[in-house]
Image (cartoon, rainbow, N blue to C red; front, side, top):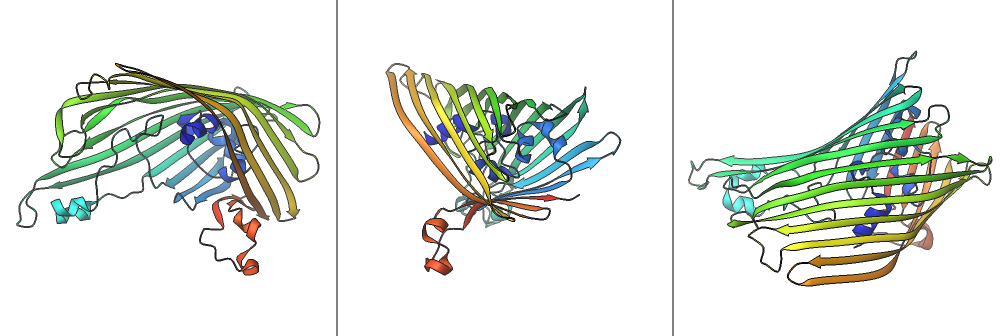
Length: 427
């Protein structure tokens, strides 16, 4: 349930959910990327890449094992254009439903299972680290800053073997692969960056075969389409209001031919997910003094996911439609940063929301449930800057509550920082 709520609050543009460089600052300040001006904006609004040329960027997450690196290059002094290239290693990536379910049982392999079937197949065992590549391109178009983004995630493995030895007694023809492509277009007002608009489209698919080469499942629809827009309404030197909107639709589906490898059945099933989501918000940037920034954002969000279950593999009671609607009204996001030393800033932020969830299942039996709840998340971090180098951290609050271990004597078992983002100005 929490995963679904987080999706409503911060990831309505599913096509552009990639965690790339400088996310840490906007996250620590209450996940306020929509109303802040930061280089992380260029991944939601590709037109912003024109504002951040010649940067080396990095994002490093301890708990998730996520590592991203990238550079934005500027070419041609007369008519400049910017190219951003980013690479990443991710611990887990695969076809998921809008509720986070593993659509394709992906990956199904078990590194303890493979050697029992074929000792030599261990050498062909896949890596658990999908590779990711993203490119951003920006230039002036019709007097505005235009941007294009392309995101590619790939993951694949296969094990093939003929039974030609006394050790390896079985023929093996197993494989899995996953690919996801995301395309984005964006425009940003060129003079002062007063407004941004963008659209993103994601599509992809997968293959999934068991040890005998039998197809386990296949996609039955896999795409997302989203848009976002915001406007910076300057009211005074200290106050800027930021109305914004996001909306998205999508479809995810799987046709299943068997529950698990080597237990293939003749009965198939089909799960088809469809999704609609919107988010309207009104934020404010407030600069009470030099080297200080406070942000606040109020809004309303809604997400509706409908699933249709069909196929001979389901019983009569299991077939039907299930619909879940999440209504968030209101949400509030807060953030603050201020200078402590000339080389260090302190940051804090949080999110609070009131939400309602409605679930209805129409089949041979009826389910109709509604429940209300609230959700709160807080953040703490530090920002460091030395010359052209900037580091943003998302830190464990235990450091503050108990003090550094060389003062308190506490034996910290967790990392001091959960994530660190880096920006280096090359020129």
